[in-house]
Amino acid sequence: NGSDESQCSDDSELVGMDADYVATFFESFMLFVAHHISEYFMSGSVSELLDPEDCRLILPIASCDMEAEGSDASLVACVDPVDFTSFECGMFPIGSSVEKQVAPTPHLVVGDAEVVRHKSDCNEAEQRLAKKTMALFFSQHNRRFAWGLTARSCTARAYVFGMDDIWASTDMDIASTEGRLALVSLLVDWSLCPVDHLGFDPSIRYTLSNQIGNPYLEMDIYEVDESMGLVEKRTYYSQRCVGAADHLTGRHTRYFAASTDPKLMGEPAVLIKDVWSTAGNSSASDTRESSALNILHAEFDRSSEFSDSFARFVSTGPVYIKQGDALVEDTTTTAFVGLPSVSQARQHRRTMTKLEGSLISEADDESKVVIATADAMAALHAVHVKCKILHGNISDRAILLQKTADGIKG
View 1 (cartoon, rainbow, N blue to C red):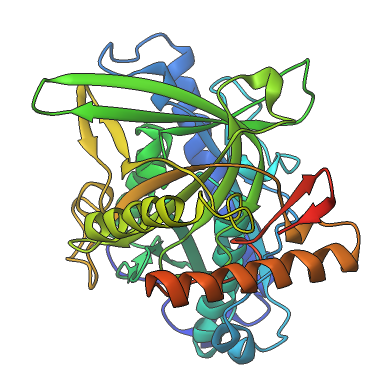
View 2: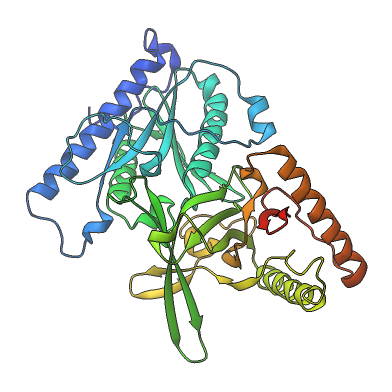
């Protein structure tokens, strides 16, 4: 109505307006903005400064099935089973039909929106949004951070979920000119921005091959020699994320079984550990890890009992991403430009070791798990006795099954 005064700030004026009605209202608003963005593009008046890869329509979609195997107990415990309405926002090519879409595959989901009727329900909506975002981190293996929206009557609020922080915008009241401008600007920015601004890792891409059938991951790893000014890019291919990020905050550690040849993804050669380490300690931690592996092999390669018991180190280093023509290290500083300072500075890093076997979590027989775990414990005891080294992160992601001439070994 063009008024600068809010008309929807009092819940008492919304008698009969349930959450489904509010959801439909906001979905219609998103479609209205997407329609004008599409019209702008189809008119041919698009700026030459815009990269076509940075342009997409953000449309409401039917809910995707994304469930995290792990969970933050504190979040799950405080989420009441209230009947909230929710919808995801998905990416679609320019020229797509501007209407509510059928759910795309999970890797195309940008973020979740939670809709409530009363102001008193907002805390529950935020908790539910956090839980859905945790599932987004779990299902999207190239997710660095995530966006979210909550809506109540005519008011929306945007959220950014980082590794250690959650930022919330002020309320955007679309019954006022200022509030409408803020929400429209957000939707336009989502539609016309580099993919890393949406929270995705530009060095990891989902690719669909007619030969393979299912989406797989392409991962670019840059090896940089700053002293010589040399940059080498290698692309790894993976269909198996053997350890997903199943928490809302923290290191967001992921493990990928990968190969340098897409035709050999069924027989991966390396295990890639992708993690957001604490800045300042990450390089030292990588050095300690690689040094420890070298010490173990120097000590035990002469021993027939434990000669094949430890992973062989390949490489480690920071993750580099392209910003324009420049190659920069991926850190919380580069990820959260324009946001308040983070409570914990982190650096994105990857470590590769040779994959010699399969994870015990993929074992088809309990006896194999018992054998592999017993072998691993014996090897770790020997490491403690002979090298005075303790392994600080024992889990099913750190123990492998190996087939030998004598059977199974851990």
